[in-house]
Structure formats: C-alpha cells, structure tokens
Length: 313
Ligand code: UDP
Ligand code: MG
Image 1: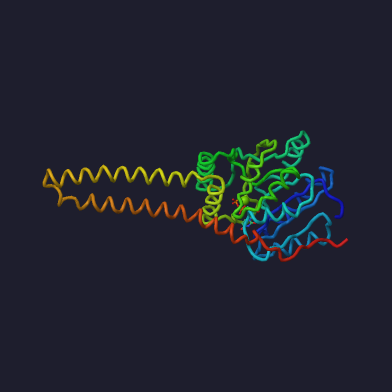
Image 2: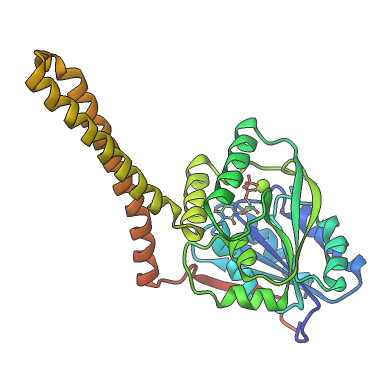
C-alpha cells in the first residue's frame, strides 16, 4: 500500500499457529466493515512453530497485511514497539494475537477517537478463563504499581487500545529499553479514555507468559515508573539501624546489670540473620536498577528485524 492508511493494527505473535488464521479473519472482517483504509502489521516474535509461514500466506493475497519477522524471540513489548514504529496509520490499534481482546471493540474505540480522544484503552471489567492465580497476581500487581508511582497508570488495562498518530510518535521517540508500553502511553498525557470490555478466554493455544516472564515484566513496570523501592530501602535501613541501636543498649544493660548475657545466643543469631537478609534484599533491589542503567548505556536495539514480508505491488 503506497498511500497512508487511516488505521494500523499491530499484532504481536509468538507461537500462535492455532489462532492466527481466526485472528486474521476476524480482524479483516472488522476492518472492512469500518470502511476505511487500513494495514495489518503482524510482528512475528521469533515463533518456533508455523506462525510466520501462515502469516506470509496472508500477505501473498492481501496487500493490507504485512509481516515483520524478528531474528529471534525478543518479547511482547519489543514486538509491539516494532509494530508501532512501522505503522503509518492516523490511528493505531494494538491487540494480542490470541483474541482475548475482541477486535469487535475497534469501532467503539474509533468513535472515541473521532470524538477527539487520543487514546482509547480497553479496561477489563471481567477476565474469563484465566486461572485464579493469574487473576489474583494481576490484581495485586496493578494495585501495587499504582501505589508506587506518581504517573496515573490505569488498572486492569493491557496493551489493547487505540492510539492517535501523535501519541504513537511520542512513544516511538522515547529511546528507553525494557519498555513498559502501557505506562509510556499513559505517561505522555493527551486525552485518554477507557472503553470497558470482558476479557475472553484465549481462542486457542496456551499463555506465552509463564511466571518467569510475569515477574520480569512486573520488575520492568515498577522500576521504569517508580524510584520508591530505593527510598523504601533507605527507610528500612534507618529502621533496622534504629532497632539495632536499641538492642545494643539492652545488651549493654544486660552485660553490666544482670547475668543473662550467655543466654543471648538465639537473639544474636536472629539479629544477624535478620539484618543480613535486609542488606541482601536492598543490594538486590539496587542491582535491579543498576542492571537497567547498564542496559540503557549499552544502548542495544530493542529488537532486530530479520525481514519484512508484504505483497509486491
Ligand atoms: N507474545 C509475544 N512474545 C512473547 C510472548 C508473547 O509476542 O515473548 C505475544 C503473544 O503472541 C500474544 C501476546 O503477546 O499475542 C500476549 O501473550 P499471551 O496471550 O500469551 O499473554 P497473556 O494474555 O496470557 O497474559
Ligand atoms: Mg493472552
């Protein structure tokens, strides 16, 4: 497509061969019904299954589809970043490949955009078919994150949203690594509004977010948008020093005025373990921030594109 489309749709895909055809069909239906020009940008994040091959098939027959193949698996956020950078639409939709977020909500989001909003984000009022563990951890995570930061990060919101070209450009311009995209989108400001929806079960396949990735993701979110953990470390440090000081006074008192001193073994061990634990925790916490500073300084790209596949016109 040589002219600039009105809408872009960014779809990050990692091992989604079971759903991707259904996703393509539903996206195509919704976008054609909306009756404006569009491009579908599938970012294949180093899938090990047939995903890339299937998407390349769409691109052979459909000039509005394009496939961006990563050189390896870089992650959900880098995949979305690549799609946003490649997109040229006046408004950009971001949606997961697994149909947990219904594309049928696009017209409602587009209506908000036409009213003058720059961001219409999907807010989950219910999550279907996800484990209690996932729902609980998600809930705690969003509440905790909000309490840690001064940026107004909406709860129960994923990457499912429409963003205006201006917002897209502003986010693309931010060079930071370890990107927590929904946070960056909130951070830029503009007029943002929630569109509520029920989050469906995955159409097929399994989650690509095991606990390990969830924890890394939560760490990115918190450290990108808050320095409070570092302040917390200082506060805990002061508190523990204060308690230790009181304990020293008690120990000295016992030494001079009582004969209880030899019975102090348990409390000594307890104190050592406790303070050591705190010190290690705080060191680890600082390590998190230092690691992030290091990756900013290394300044490696967030992703590497192996090839871009689209219909030759
Ligand atoms: N995804 C990706 N790279 C990854 C992991 C996930 O591009 O390393 C994509 C995945 O294909 C899906 C979206 O990110 O479109 C969200 O992943 P998933 O549905 O597995 O996460 P959940 O909804 O379970 O949190
Ligand atoms: Mg999902």
